Length: 464
Image 1 (cartoon, one colour):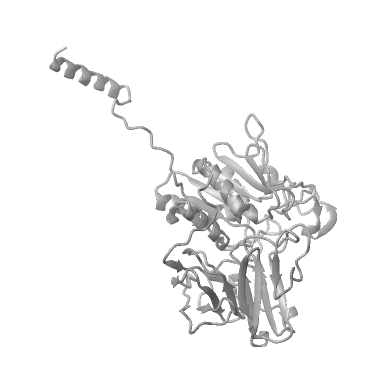
Image 2 (tube, rainbow, N blue to C red):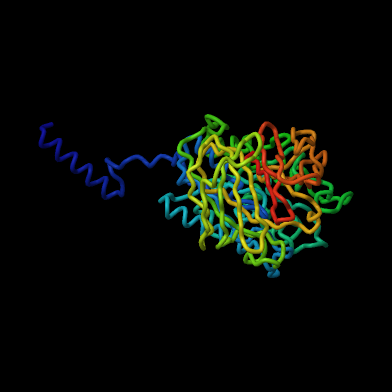
């Protein structure tokens, strides 16, 4: 065949291919996104801040920071009855709508077609509701539910049926209705995984001790978070929050999304370290005296000071290294920190106690260093100082954990058995303005006991 004949044959073949709707020169379909956008959804009464170590672990494995987004529900507490308005609380519909709007923002910002949703506890309800009833099935590729009480914290068709946490109530009955030929409980079209404890989740217990009904059956088992149609990951010994925020949960989530284990579950240091976050308070619209309602609304007008401290004594090392009166957005930063320095964050706002929060060094940058102004409880006003050790990303377990506060191991108020409390309070009765040391499984924080009589309250907040 001559050169001219070959050209004519090739042109004819191309024309036929184009007429048939295909092309000899069509590029291959795009490969799956190696780093899809992740949207993290916190639990009941919580904040986006709980995800900051999880974000660090994803970053430590090469995930771009701009593809890691943690939402902050303005009113994170569920209503007592989902169908009845309640000040300072959110309904399942409001929760779903907020998540939907946040997903759309992430998709627009990244240009991605789908996101991965990762939720802890109540956050998993919003994810399931959004995928089933809010148009999320076409926008979500994977969903990971850590410790979500998918069959309820209790299941009673005759009591508190309006609560979204009642497995026999209308909300969960509808979500768990069989779907597809196999009778799955999950919405098809999305890959699902549940992460749960074997028996150490306070909200997946056959006995009602952790919901104020000791000795009363909950009609829920240890396997309550598992769903038919989802991959069920069981990690022995972890508590309710560790189903999302612990390193083992991170490893399971990473493997589920990428198909391979992470290179590391450790948090790799970076420089420089730039910190930021939001200041919030307690009370409806942060109005003093309006009730002890947790919210994530910005506390405009609060002043934040940051001090470097001596890690051995908690004493300040010089003047404040950062100071800002926050605006309407509530942001207290940015602040360029030293990755090996311990810091004291001080919040002052009308109607609140001067709140001192001591933190371990920050190895990486984060815009999820959210701070909350607090008040002194009436029952604590007899103390010289009130110091609380807090573990937002998990609970204290005895004898599982090595935990001490001011030399007491374990501290008072931490029961043995199922891990179910995330704070340990010390009422200093001898003298204020002294060092108080706390440790938890190798993480050590030392703060100062500021005087309660002068309306100061102290927190030692753990990373892990």
